[in-house]
Length: 146
Image (cartoon, rainbow, N blue to C red; front, side, top):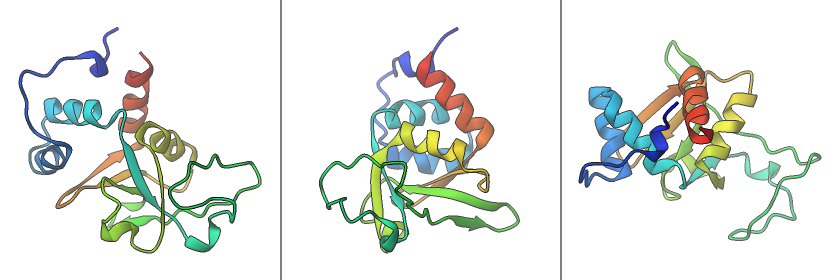
């Protein structure tokens, strides 16, 4: 089995923001795979209800959630497509203006798989967004560990 995370790009200079736009517009498999590769070690910003953040968690400091923590994730509704777990590529995104937590991209995807009430991951870039259903999220996670 091969891994999409071990492939080399052929001088592709696009950044994550351009790739999100290209995936949203063109839905090319090669663009999806390059996006997965570029996101693998990145942090994303996940909107949460501010009052649900544990008092022990301090802004800018690493915090590992405990079993008693009850972070409440904000979801986004896609018309006719249900609730999705959102994340933004930038902390200045309007999506996370009410409060957010930063987390590794693959950690976010693992979390998405555990939430029964969402259809998948919604990734907001600077100007475009992509929705990754749970089947695609499972594929990305399987490739990340291959």
